[in-house]
Length: 300
Image (cartoon, rainbow, N blue to C red; front, side):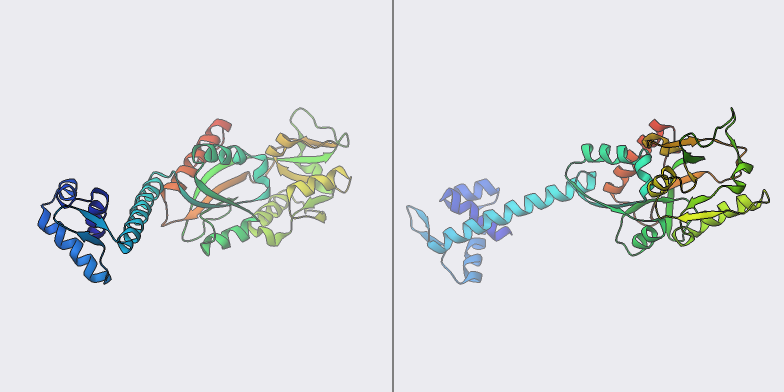
């Protein structure tokens, strides 16, 4: 690199003394470096005389190559500097479908506006599959259900809210305190399969059992949005996060549940414990901001 820099100075100044002054060195070491470059390349790059210095055809090509190299180095240094500041890089984020009814989209939009040069890849999936992708380093972070704390990961709380009962419009009337939990005893439930999130499914089953009840599952579906669609079609009722009210569907009422033993809906941002790059740190900061604005539990 020193040889190329010294040679480029001579190529642009066409004068050894001026080139040495430009590079803040004396002329003899500069001349030696240029001669060493010619020897290494096996090509004469400069035509020298007592009155002038000129470039050979090979010298013109090496000068152009040197300019490209130095521009590439400058770009690389700027890119690394931007990555250190969290202003550039790549971020792969997983999210579960219900994230659409939380402050998550606003957090992503805020991050995108503040960091337009970050390559952002979004991956949708269930909590189990997203945890697996995170473990395989296919994701940098994931918004998932907050059941358990897998070894090797760090979880930051993002949202907590209660479950409400989604019913076909006008089918059930709620009192001032909401629908009594015991009224769910004989209602057909639209629920997700246990394999999608065993911890959550089992906690719901335990809540029913604590009141001497058994879940009566009439339909299974993988997403809350699909569950609400089946509710609108009259195929049952569904237990959904209160945030689903933000994207209310025609033909569906969302009723509070009185004296509910159900666990709260908890979403966390999961990342690998040992990793916290600048880009991820900036993303978590935007998640924290939007959680605070929405009054949710913020990441730590």
